[in-house]
Length: 346
Ligand SMILES: *[C@@H]1O[C@H](CO)[C@@H](O)[C@H](O)[C@H]1NC(C)=O
Image 1 (cartoon, rainbow, N blue to C red):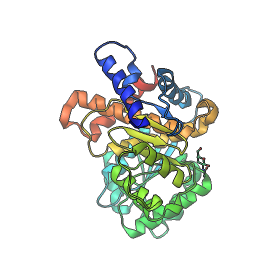
Image 2: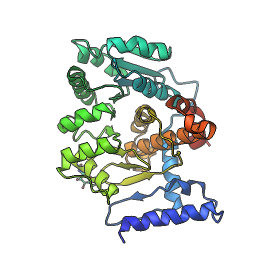
Image 3: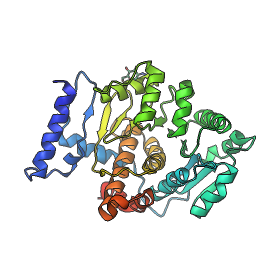
Image 4: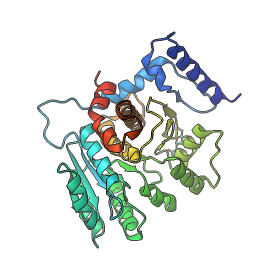
């Protein structure tokens, strides 16, 4: 039996024990283990599992009256075009509900009015298809703490070219960049655009992951070793953080693999990935700002990614408990506050 099989088995046994009431360790359900490398394949103890939640809590800025607007995060979402207006909305509103002060959406002209009409809380810039789009977004970059590239971006050549320019400018400013959806399509065409930029987090679903993996490693994904594949993709990209979304989310920074199997439900609704990307925009900023001292030497982006994955799954679980199969992404957004409180403010 492979080492991976053993650590999974241990987690499954713990889960079973808990289900039949033999243990009372809530966070064991999350079936999380950190692995230093595959040859070591350590299954970590409950202490480690509690620790990573504690590390997330450590980077969350306290709510005090002394802070001024903008300190908790101004997040930019790059995406939104004629066909897709829901994705950037979900990402931006989630960022606000997680605790960002301001969410900016940079989208095409015809998407802007639509997105504004969903929510008066968002700042919407109709610039993404303008001839000087990159410059228009660049003007805002000094005021942004992180950017999320891709929700509702689509594959229009001009928009992808503009997204590319925005990624380059954001790198020059050193701000954390989250890349999702069609932003990942762009990266699979031109990996060098983000390769080696360790302040980037990629959030591929399985399809997007396979495309990236094949582009980088010139090999199909090894379906018997998902952990190894996520680790190798992160390394091939120069150790930036990779979050493979799935039944369990696998997160790697090229050194470790962290598994987030927090509860969730069998129901995955469209837009869930946008909630993840939006919350990651905020958490990446907080974790980056807090630095490795507050994360106990762990990579802050790994901690941020774990936080965002567990939060999204908690929203899914809560919405599912209320609504069952009729739940949608909007119902998950409505759970962000309670889910955040439950996971990180207890
Ligand atoms: C990525 O991390 C691995 C494991 O820690 C290390 O061996 C490698 O040198 C790192 N690569 C880069 C480009 O930092």
